[in-house]
Length: 100
Image (cartoon, rainbow, N blue to C red; front, top):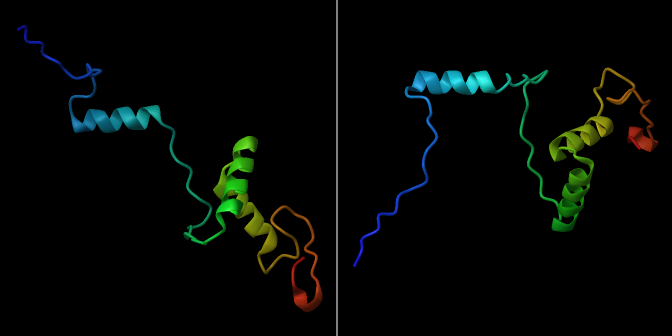
């Protein structure tokens, strides 16, 4: 019976030292942009159907879910020192100063 040796997928030649690896990674990818201010993670529970609608609509528009939701939160909760939403629209307030 003939013996056959099975080898793994050939590897592409890569950096030989950790310093070369770090240099190669930083040269190929742009510097990440720093946020204007520190961020804080917000975790909420939403119905599966709502998540699916948001995710599919964002995918169709090529939008990032987090950016869309941040935009909605900015519009709903503008900074207190301004009478306008983040997009420059005047804030419409209803009874009890509830933003509409």
